Amino acid sequence: MPSPHQGLPEPPTILQELYALSSTPETHLSVFYPDRDPSTHPSPASSATHKPFVTLTFAQSLDAKIAGAGGKQLILSGKESMVMTHWMRTLHDAILVGVGTALNDDPQLNTRHLPPLPTDYPHPYRLPRPIILDTHLRTSPECKLLKNFQAGRGRRPWIICARHHTPTVDENIRRQKQNRATALETAGSRVIEVDADNATGMISIPSLLAALRADGVRSLMVEGGAQVIGSFLSAAKGASETPSRDNSGFSPKTAAGGKIVDALVVTVAPTLVGDAGVGYGPCLLANVLPKLEHVRTEVFGPDAVSALRVV
Image (cartoon, rainbow, N blue to C red; front, side, top):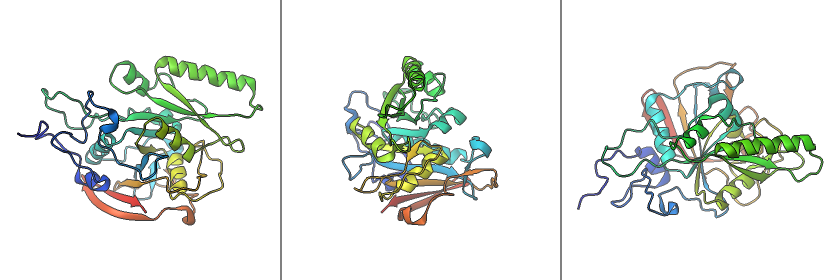
C-alpha cells in the first residue's frame, strides 16, 4: 500500500541529516496530526532530560552582520534559504526570538513560505509554538503573532518574563508590569515568569530552558536577534560564566551539567552590510565558544547554509 503522504514535499537533506530524522509511511516529518499525542511527533532529541534540544539559527552577511543600524530588520536570506528555514520550523516544538526582534520585525514565525499541500490532503503543516523572551513585557498586544492566533492562523504565543523575588522592586513598576501582563493575556498570549538573577535582573538561559522543558517543549529553534544569539553562544558549551548585563535581558551564566546549544544552522548571504550593521559576537570570548562538528553545507539560491553540531 502506498504511503498516505507519498509525493508530498520533504524537508531538505541538510536538515534530515543534521537531526537524524526521516519520514515514515505513517508519519511525515513536517505534518501536524491533530488526532495524535503531540509528544509523538518527530523532533530532534536532547540527551539531557532538563532541557530541550536547542538549534541556534540565523542569517548573516559576509561581514557577519545580522541586522541594520539600531537593530533595523535586514532581509538577508534569499527565497530558497528562507524556505529551508521554514522547513526547519516544522521540525521543532517551539521557536524563540528576543523582544528586540519582536518589536523591530513584528515576525509571524510560521511556515507560510512552504510549498502548498494538495487541496485534498487532510492535515496541515506543523507550526512551532512562538515564544518571545521579554524580561519587562514590552511586547505589543497588537503584534502579528497575537493577531494570527486570534484569527485562528497561528498558535498561542508564550511570552517569557522575569520573576523578581526582591522586595526592593518599586510598587508602581510592579503594578505597571502586571497591567502589561493582563493586556497580553487578554489578547491571547500566555505569560510565563522565570526566575531572574537578583544581582543582574536577567533570566539565566538554563532556567529558561528548564521551564520550557517542564512545559513539554522537546525542541527549540532560536532565531535571534543579536543579543539573544550572543547570549546563547556564550552559554553554548555549558561552562560556568559570570553574567554580564546586556540588552537581551538574559544571563549567559550556566549551571554545570552539559551544553546549552545542540546545533547551529547558519545562512551566509553574498552581501556586505558595513560598520553600521549589528553583529552577534563582538563580546564573545574564545574560551566560552563551543566546539563544532561540520555536518553539511548546501547552496540554496545565492546563499550558503552550513549545519553544525555542538560537540
